[in-house]
Length: 368
Image 1 (cartoon, helix red, strand yellow):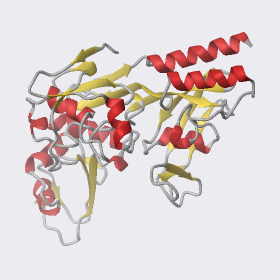
Image 2 (image 1 turned 180 degrees about the vertical axis):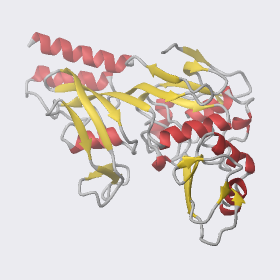
Image 3 (image 1 turned 180 degrees about the horizontal axis):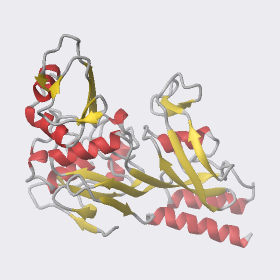
Image 4 (image 1 turned 90 degrees about the vertical axis):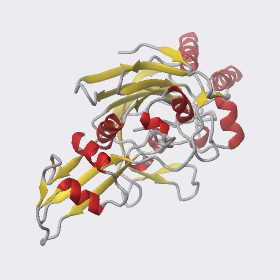
């Protein structure tokens, strides 16, 4: 399911800036799609005391969670995001001694001014509850780390400026996941609080469907399998993530992969995320010795496989120029619609830069 339209909001939003230029000038730190690490939603756990008297769960949570509104609690309940002993409950449920309560909610807006900017959006699907966007490589998802303009959030603040969720100017308004600045592909964004809460729960529970296409150095052996290894912040370089195979550091991460096209020295790989850690695909493929093509941060921006012939070296240089980013595209996104309960599945074609580079490798292999 995919159709595309490019939209831009009307004035008085500020004019959009050149995304790639801004990010290079400010030295932005990119963040790949993440789940509970991302700061997009919060998770509470409570073990009820033995002496607890019977009390409605909405009142119990109001007393236990600082600064929470009854509306946020009700949205979480309606989204089946309030669980007692592992099962969703209604607002009228009365908390009993020794109950175990779990709550997942999107974070409330921060007190950070988001300036609406008239930046075109490539919209694959839109209804009253959500938007599915096809993000171009080079666009930062939300402000931070020196990028306080020209982001997807600035564009959404303009395009959706009449909706209550966006009028507060929250830095996380509508976001339930995100992808790297230089990763292209599909993102879903909520348009109201209830949709936000229900979608956030799906990403937190890893029930969404997410598939990526990556171009990596070499050909993984075996050509299909799973990469398993905890991912955490590198102890040597805070801008990188690293794999801790002993499991004592980082958080569990699993990437399922399958080679879909073999170009000899590089290969196109389909990746399915079972978890969603920061830089998960990039860190996992570096860990197994197959960094993403032209991934500067993870060592893929040099010739790692192939020959010493001048023709080959020139091919790689040409490909780097045609694809001046790491070769990763969020191709497929699936989730349950927060209102209708219908299974939604979207597919995005490869962007021109990745398609052109892959075609160049095809021609090279055929001509050998």
